[in-house]
Length: 248
Length: 228
Image (tube, rainbow over all chains, first blue to last red; front, side, top):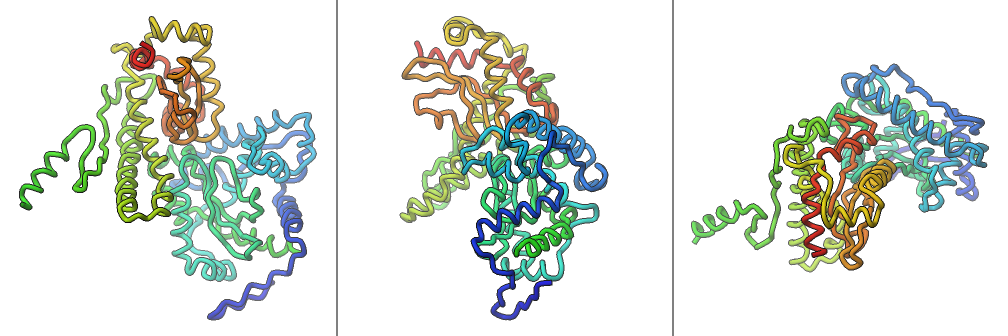
């Protein structure tokens, strides 16, 4: 357990030093991905179900939404990705590596959208839980207080990023290894923070299909409900643990 | 003096094209639909038309007006960074207003000619350029379905080259962002809000059905004006 001493002028959280952080971050991603179970793609990628029944997040996120969002949209990303990478060298890589390779420094290759959206949706289902919401505690809360001022400031910044992502996209809580800090970022369409070498900790989907059946145009209401009732701080905490464990 | 100012502002407030604010800044208001919300059924549901018009389009207008006021302020103060920073809000929301204003005119109830194929000059131009109307529709449907995220699929006219084009734009970018000489004839909104309540994830079905209420008369009028 990494010692935290958050005093007046915060003592920097003691993460073991990286040598050549770029490379370590990438292998960090791989280790995280293997822990999360995204091993090397052999043959076909499977559609993973959310870690709860499709009606478990009612009334905040309806079963009907899950039937379409997971059952149709997420399934289509998986099916279409399988078709796109069949017979190519991408089948030998981890999903995370496929994402970074097809991001191609911003000059997106065709499989990028499907690959990233497969990953994003797995990450999103795992970012929520029945009886979720509320506040984190312990070290995660200390870090949030340190890097955002307060939990309320973080929640406001996260919801604003999500509300102002124009068109389709995502908002994220990430860990930035380059400044050893938590941050909120937003991304368009299928883009995710893996391509910027950040460690994703939490996400909310703001494509309209994520909230339209339940909230129609009322994205801010969806975001408030997400924060109050859906966020899985357990998942965020365990992802943060992986960051610390992954560094060598 | 105060009474006269009050009267002036009230008179100006009701102009259909826009409202002149106190400092002369033109702001915008929601244009009426030329048909009832339910008039495009079953191709597009009344629920969608109402939400799309009263909520989505109205929000673009509200935010566009806000951005214009902030821009006016920043310009008056000579605040260059603020002016530049406002450009994305203007593009998003102004684009949303421009695009949706065209979209409502692109659609018509069947009993008012919605779905009737284009004739005369636009009809010939389509046959010349694409081979047939069916080919054009297939092309627009394919590109509309393949668009990732949010955006529009357009039939446009390059007014310099006098040529028809099919283009997509992302988010609320107007067609002119794809070429300064491009004039929109028809646009199809493929943001999920345009079809989700009715068609869910099956965007291709929405695209197939929207042609049943396509107002080719409007497209022909625009075309004839640019290519007399």
